[in-house]
Length: 231
Image (tube, rainbow, N blue to C red):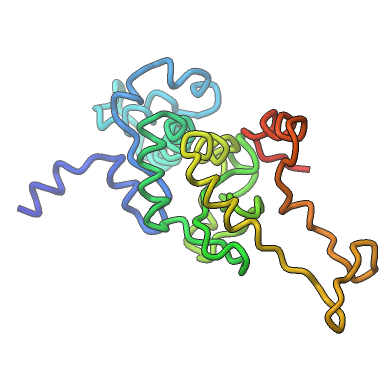
């Protein structure tokens, strides 16, 4: 029975089940077979056709030289990651990521006052090869490194800069949870008196915890809600 199940295992399911790949969801074959969803990727990924055939478990149109197999495998992983970045912005992809979010697959925020807020994977860049995946907290709006080294080789572009904003727009209850937790802010005191922000020992990063207070601030926030800026 195990032999039969192993024969039926697809490249995608096998890749997503690898150690350290639990942030990924299995992209549907129908999504990958739609050429519109792959627009522009052929110019980024070497051995594009061979890599696509490998992902879809198709027999290659031309035989692949043994010396090129490792390159094709690497290209397949790159191509899948870039497809994954697009897939998790779809209704189906968001639902699959929401399931992982609820199960704390991405972990919880290490900040004490965020009270265990669940995290979301994010990339600070949409271009592959620049930075590894980070984790975004909807409560404090900060990003963190994964707490396990198993994720430190996962490219952040495989999740992209847009995902957290799209996720919170689709699931406003996450924003509500963040607002409830976000009301708690630590206030530094000296002998019971609050330390003024202009003091040398005053808070410097309080702006990170701020939320829009009027309509103009809300519009400014919405204008940049779908991208995490990288200074």
